[in-house]
Length: 150
Image (cartoon, rainbow, N blue to C red; front, side, top):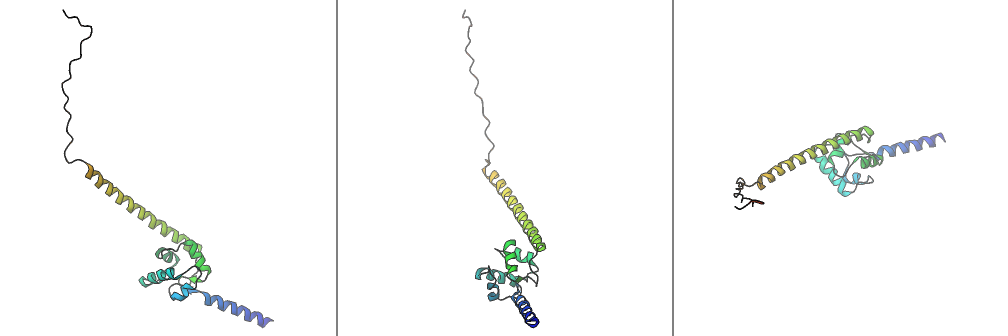
């Protein structure tokens, strides 16, 4: 009985180790084997990996479009790792900070671009010649009321 339990435990451990798929070394087929990763996403992962290996989960989430914290949690549960590490709360916080920093810098750039465009539009609609000053015609004398004609 003891040998049977040991064999069963060894089999489970071997399966758990074998199930881990590292994003930096996985083939397209191995990535497709992770629940939630299809051909489109695995292609984006491999394309980004050609630029540089993924440093950590935050780097992976930041560089691969369509992957967020929620999907990273699910991929990690299915056996995906980055440099041998499972997704953690610390990785989520780091990815969130990186995402919000990227988002705020994008918003600042958009505001700056809109401001420049607004200035250009304002100068384009301003007339080139100064506005004509209105010349007032001499006021007609008001009729006298109650004046005597002598």
